[in-house]
Structures are given as C-alpha cells and as structure tokens.
Amino acid sequence: MHIKILCHIVLINFIFLQGCGAKPEHFIPDFVEEWFEKDSSIPDLPDIKNNTSLKLLWSKSYSGEIDPSLNKVKLPVLYDKIFLFNNENEVFIVKKDNGEVTKKIQIELDILSDILPTASSIIFSTQQDTISSYDFNGKLLWQRIINGEILSLSQIYNDMFFARTVDGKLFSIDFITGEILWQSSIPFSSLSIRGIGDPVVFDDKLYMGLDNGRLMALNPFDGNVIWSRQIVNIIGQTDIDRLSDIDSELKYLNGIIYLTSYNGVVAAIDSNDGRVIWRIKDSSVYSLEIIDDQIIYVNDQGHLISLNLYDGTTLWTQDILFNRLNSKPLILNDEIYVRDLQNYVHIFNLSSGELKGRIKLSEKPIGMKKSDNNLFILDSSLNLKMFSYIQDKN
Picture (tube, rainbow, N blue to C red):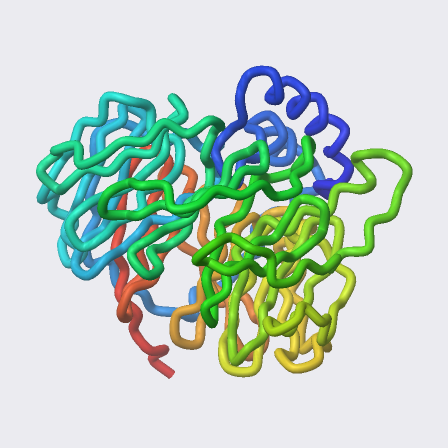
C-alpha cells in the first residue's frame, strides 16, 4: 500500500498530536507502520545468493530500548566515540573500535532530540522544553528553557548551533554558554507527515526546508532572510492533498542543494539565489545520498532509484523490494545499504541497483552510520553491530 493511501489515518493522529505535544523528529506513527507491514502487497523476500562480504567485527548490547516511532536515529559519531541514548534517559558514550562504554550519563529530564556531540560535551533538547549541555562526566554545563518543543538541532557552526521548534521559531545558540544569540520566526504548517528537518549551513548560509514546500536561505549571524523560494508546486483541495514537506536532510555539492520532498519533487537548487536547476516529480520522506555523478534515494513506494546528478534523468530503478524499503540509503564503497520495514538491511550494487544480499537482525534496525570503512547498525533494543567491508571474492 502506497504511503499516500494512509494519509487520512495520519491526519487523525496529527490532530491528536497538536493537543498533546509533537512526536520526535522523523516521526511516522507506529500503527501506520504496523498496518503497512501487514499489508498483503508487501512482497516476499526474493531468494538470492549473498554476493557481498561483510565481516561482523563486534556486537554490543546496552540497557534500555529506543522508541521505534523515532523511525530514524542519527547515530552520531565524533572522532573515536559513538553517542547513544535510551528511553530511560541514559546517554552512552562508547568506543567506536570495540563498542565498550566509556561513559554513561543519567539525564534527569526526558531526551527529545538526538544527541549533538562536541569535543567535550553533549547537547540535546528535552520534552520539558529545554536545551541542555552536559560534559562527558555528567556535569550540567548549561540549560535553557525554550518556549516550544525543539525537535531539530543543527551541527556546530562558528561556535553556535541552530534549533527549530514545532511552532515555527528558530534560535541561534552559543554552544559553549547556551546564550541565545538571536531568535526568528519562520512559516510552518500545522500538518506534517514527518516533523521538521534540521537547519544546515553550507557556504556561510543557513538553509531550511519547510512544510509548505519552500526552501529558505538565511544569514546565520543575524537570521535575516537571504532568499525564499517555492520549490514544490502545491496543488489539491484538502490539507492532505496539499502536504508538501521538505523535511529530509539537505545535501550540498559545488554550490547546488539537492533535496527530496513528500508529495512533491526531487530537485537541484542553486544555493546562491534559490533558482531551480532541475526537478522531477516524485515523493520521498527519506533523504538522498550523492556519490560521484549519481543521486541515490528511496521513494515512498519503496523503489530504490538512481538519478543523473546533473540533469535528474533516471539511470536505473530497483523495485524488487517495493513497499519494504523505508530509510535513506547509505553508500559504502560500491554498495548501497537500505533498511526495510522488517528486521533486514538490504544491499544493492551501486552501478546497477542489483540486489546483492541482506543482513538479518533480531530486532528492527533504526539507525545506520558509516565511518571510515565500517558500517554501524543499531536496532530498537539498543544492540549495536559493527561490520567491516570486504571486496567481493570474484
């Protein structure tokens, strides 16, 4: 079942959320995914011979769980450390090379965003409408009360980071002191399929995709708007039909921003003025990846697609796992890794899209990260595995 068919059910849930507080970033309700999983149109897994070689280096389990409704976990890695948290508000700092816990920090409030790590601290938002910073020994460095739930934090830029609230406020915050440097208001929609995307800084501009199909560029030092462009042409008579979120992670290469959108387009945008260089009509709630002259993404039907980077023409489409694939692709060497609705990570050939193999997990995979030549996979029960890539034998 195409995810658009489920939108009327999603609307009921979001009306409820407006009164009870928003769910975490990239939220897709559990009951939607459960219905999706039970749909008879989900194909059986094809019989394949694994034509890829991944060596499991280690597997570690940590206490607690992660709410699967987060749907997407960033699994932040900084230097030799990986940062995790569980539903008991414990933060784990683990060694990247062996998964051993070096620090465990108990947080008194309820963690809402994922962890933003720095060289000596962690930053996150909470369900109590605060942003907090702790050092690696668990000492509270600063805490700021923000009027509104913050689901989205940017990376550090010039000793500051940027935070978006669900009700359209944008903050610039000094990551060392927690001082609010400036505050601005941005347009927002009361209805969204995913939540809000992270603000990102490229070429000294702060970019944000909005729920109304617009893309904005701002001055990161004062919040003034540099340009704002309508990227998705909104059509339809109902709020459901007019959903056009640009909430996925924006990608940047050589002065061009690449993006996906729900119920909209995949597009390449000139970062200087917001001019559309090319766009194709397709719907995706998942971020794309760029490798050489290819764009790789998964659309809402679970098709894995490769586009020409320069004009958006289709290079290949892989639909053997339609209605199964449900994550952004991760590219490691010449292979593409994509999670599905069940407990699998599927592996595809980069140049052709051919299905090459799969990884079976005991629980639902909710996060993947590549670092150096290694692949990290985290499941909902807080089991973390590290694989190393080995070239095909033939």
